[in-house]
Image (tube, rainbow, N blue to C red; front, side, top):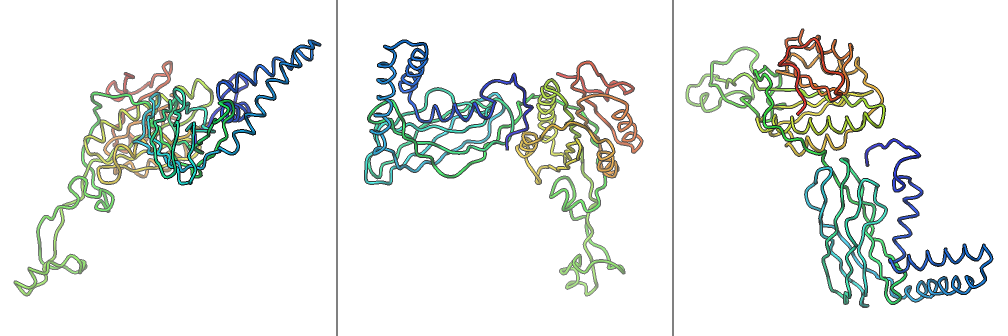
Length: 402
């Protein structure tokens, strides 16, 4: 789904659902020449209301031409198979260029075929004029290129592809929609950082083998020793048993590795806050990029009215998966600090450091920082609100905005 939007009467016209619906149908059925003919008929209709009798002839001509074009095009409505070839996701503000395969599986040729996306969300806008295939014979296949300007990060749905023919009138397009929807992911705009320093001492992780999934030192065999009461039978070293006749078990190195947390404050109450929220996600993507390259385990806590916990690391998820999480995050109207503390503080003893990307700075947030430091966790705090700089922290604990 596309991200939540704040409705306003003053938002751009294409973002109003009803206007977008009308505009989509208008462009789906009429060529630029057909659109001009429709506007001419509308102008003639207005002149008729003002009592200008000659306008009746012009209105009748325009409306008649459109009706003839509509009737003449029906037998040539194409029956085609369409499929997208989507590339890897792009970032907000970029243009997505992809291929569409068009195949004619009928026994009739298709002429003057226009291929285009329809019913797109307002954040995705077609670039340039849609491609036209002059002729596609029975059994033939062609490829065309489409481009979408991706204004905002998010997970979107491409509802349908449309193939339409404006043969023979060049006024009216008879459309045929391809079934099937596809998901398009747009990453947040990336803010690259040259470096980001955090304390990275290794912490003991109970059950670290499945958690780390081969990150750090969790799978190293330290040696063997004599059997003791309570040892697991699956740890028996069978070659040593066969050689000595005594029970010998394997010993593993302790499960230590670097585990960091990134807390994302998703509280946003206004349009201006939404812009700051997008900036915070861009900065979070840059920080995650630096941390992921150092092969840390990264816990992401998205904190709003609820708290969502994601974990990523070298074998658990790649940097692209972190970007996918950031692309799909929704802003919320409030931050429930009690819920965040209930989830974050029990994990504190396993964490080397916590990076907090905050939408604001107040006493509740400052108290959370104090509780984390009381647990012995190093903190790095970044507040995206320019007029609310974190206070009461050491200089190295505050991250300056790039």
